[in-house]
Image (cartoon, rainbow, N blue to C red; front, side, top):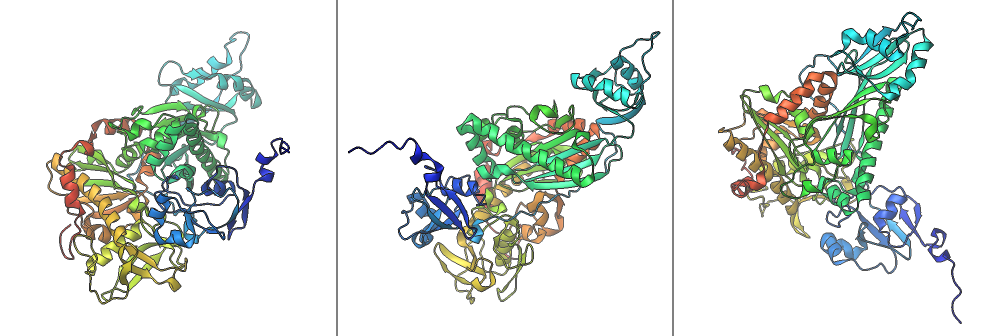
Length: 624
């Protein structure tokens, strides 16, 4: 007898087996075809996933608490090693159509990252693009029946850049009520002396602007009073696009798989900026409707993804962006929920992997006027670099890989609570760890990894090839699943209950990352006819927290020495603020981008040779 029709009930979520994520107790129906990563997101379980679900990074490990777990995929086995035999799987590669219990280890759950909001920069003279002017507009009369718009423009006359200004339909619609409410006493917001953005009843209305640094990992927003230049609030958040990959290459690949994915990434970035704007305004006690100007900077991929521009060309030679020009747009055109006619300015990008954040950092640090050879370096998955000397400037981007952000490191993690940010080794090789938040260590963020390598190098535990020196009289140096490893903290001292180790492969990852940076700086020096860097300014979170001594010890760039290295914080954010508070800084950014020479390292015949040279680690007491 045939089975009765199920009338679609078999596909109903109510009939699907459940997956339970422990120790959080989150239960979610096992939708057909969904990976454990998909189900974790649906259940609100935050799982690390730097590679965007490609099964490469090994950071989304979970343990299947099942009597007969499904076998690991070949790729999983390669990434997990012995952990696969203990029931561990990669959440992004595993499905559980029959449901079951899944244990999420503490180290697979990323904490909130420490977000850098402060940055160095020269003082900025206040001259914003948007000015709010208190006016009294006289009423019309039978003798002079001039229309309302014209009467407003007559009062604005002394402040206009030309003979007239634009009045948008939105401003015209609200003009009758604005003029009537307080007898013609209004506050008018004027952009660049030629466009009226807002007319509000009453005088002394707040005139606000927002500067945004849209980073791959973090987003920072600065709310400023355009009348006084005061910073009213600073808000920050993780970039929600991380759910689709922690690096730009993963997100570009995701965007290229489906046009809807591009719009999804754009929507996430815009929603994040809107939320930060609302939060900043709430802190300052002002309405978002008074935010009349916004300046947004980011790397070229973030710039494209925010605007909804196809980024796929950025991942393919010759890595050309859709546009590199500075843009002035209505903020509402890209979904920003600010004042109805608010302006949005995006400074120029230079190349596929040198974005407006690099231009903004160079602007804040006065790159065009630097005399002595100065390196401006923002390190992450890509190392964006500017070398400036005597009015000459050259920039490039080095594919450093994720090691400087804790990626591809056995116990790597973001700079969140529990991350080791610095390691000090005594002569007996006993480590002292500086941990973000002060508790037991959970993993190593980028600065901690570099610090550990530098300490081992200076203690003589590593040689110039990056190999552990065998025969050291220390129980901390031992064989591991993938070669020798050094125990930084024993299991009883860590938050995970497992030994925290630095492996030989981790050291190799640091070497690869620093070799790319080293090669880029070396070639720029050669192109400008310079022999050495006299000053190095490290921008961004990694550069700010990296110990200059550690950077010098590993030979981060040719001639790297602690005494020439300075962290300058979020210089990109400082540049965005400068462009918000002074309209002429926007023109300077345009000039700076035009004056920057660009070096495509992939096209440099000497890159491979300089890269190999950069793999070497300086011996203790040697010159980087």
